[in-house]
Length: 95
Image (cartoon, rainbow, N blue to C red):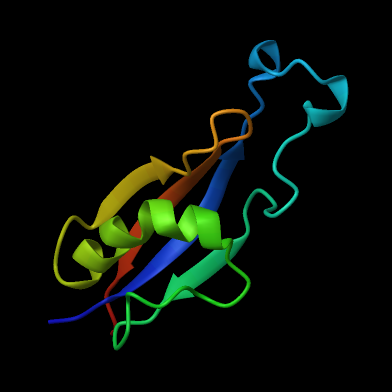
């Protein structure tokens, strides 16, 4: 059985102690906390519209596994060490 997967932006962090340039000490501008995306159950390997390509490259394999019956919930992040974004993933069971 295939499932949709909801991706929610849970947190945006800044590791400003690792960033030399003060101008770079801002959270990722690509996402807003609470923003939601849905990966389709028919093609879960395809990036949802408006999602960041770099972040998708980091979480896509987890989303694909969840869509194919993997864990119902998962928390993961993109690999930007300076401005990481934390995502909450939830399998959606159609009623």
